[in-house]
Image (tube, rainbow, N blue to C red; front, side):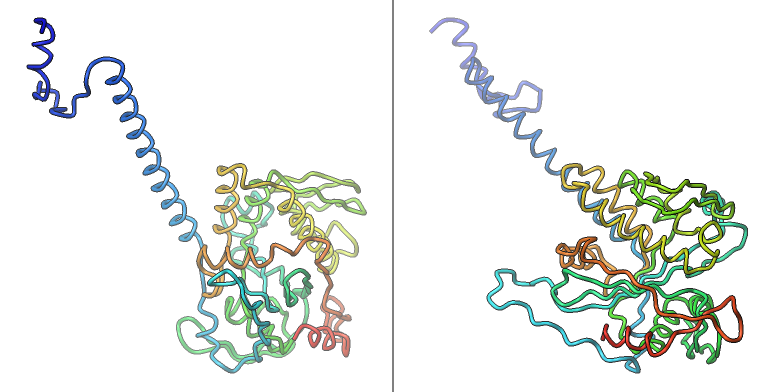
Length: 367
């Protein structure tokens, strides 16, 4: 044995003060490979831990974005009957198969007019929030087709007595504008008013904040829409020539808000624009491969969850994901958009009332 070999043997297994102790790898090529494999393993472990922590934070953040209202508890049992649920296919491999039955969802666009950001987005000078957009979304059994019924905000209705969050209730009001329900009683009163008007049970409630909608459009890279006439509306800050346009979030929101720059300036003209915008947004989502870009996927998810208020049946990321997965077979071509049949109100030409019997027949078809 040489002097160098004796020194190597003597040093083997001793602690040199580096803290490695008996973990010191043997010298030579084998030792270098062992140290490299150990370093790679530690690096991979660190990446996995960091990834899991990041994913956990992202899930927690997105889940925390969603606001909810316990509508079922507030309204109790005095409501229209639920639709008959379609049984899930037998022999499904999934322990918790996705729902396939028909479902009715009240979707409100909450247009906040307060704050610098909303005013810059065309919100005007008034304060508070208004439900200027109301759609009853009926998804058929099988969830590959759906009907979206827009309810004009200027419709005169009988607003039922609604429970208030702090106790007590509002009084019954006759011949008032439909969107006053949200103003006086929030989501609970909006749902109760729609159910009283339609005799259709709203299985879920989804409220979309308009400024959050603008962020969603930007996260998707914009949306392509076609208008059949020029739009020139100083109130919504939108000026568009007739034709096809690629809109960013600010201009898409202005399109959803505009009414004075199109048609006769009534809410009915705006509803047509909003229905076209919904279809265009569905097409944009379908054409965007979010799974290939985790960053964009998170940005879109953050924009969606950050703009939502739901009922307690949809107030988690898991529940929203299950609903979205159950609607994977629904495309823009399977979506029918209509407006509740209305006529000018006898008491006020600037207001409308349900046109009967057409309106009742429409709601009956959704039960």
